[in-house]
Length: 170
Image 1 (cartoon, one colour):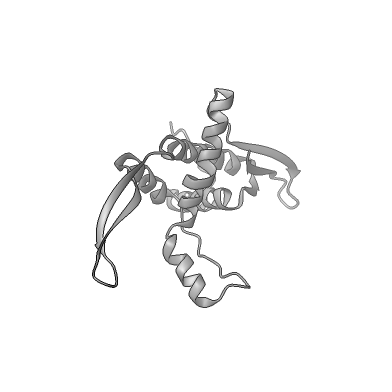
Image 2 (cartoon, helix red, strand yellow):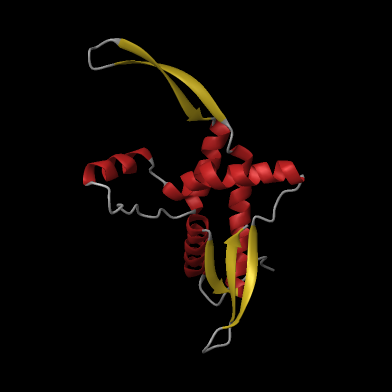
């Protein structure tokens, strides 16, 4: 017996739909969907947040020697991911989609390209830099893990009367 809902779709379509909804939940903070889909999205999102929480502070300081424009040797201190954090990031990247960056209205083209070079996977960066530390702090204060998302029922959808919900990060 499978431990997931089939949602009336073939497995490739189902996985693509859930990946898309989980990505949007992490990026925007909340999504509107049906109850069955919402429960599946909640399960997957909590799993990814837990992976990120365990490794969000796991970094390594390195000193690198490089040459600058004047061919002088300069030592730089760089913060890199530890091997466990890198593996966790790759696991999360394997599941989440990339959301294309949007150029701000007051931002010129060169600044936009420079900003895009700095952050390659925006959703994963948001998960590891913003969401995971927030929930890790909450877990330390309250002494509990889990419960990162909330499902709020909105009532039946007009047309097919499917139970609609809002899934949001708490």
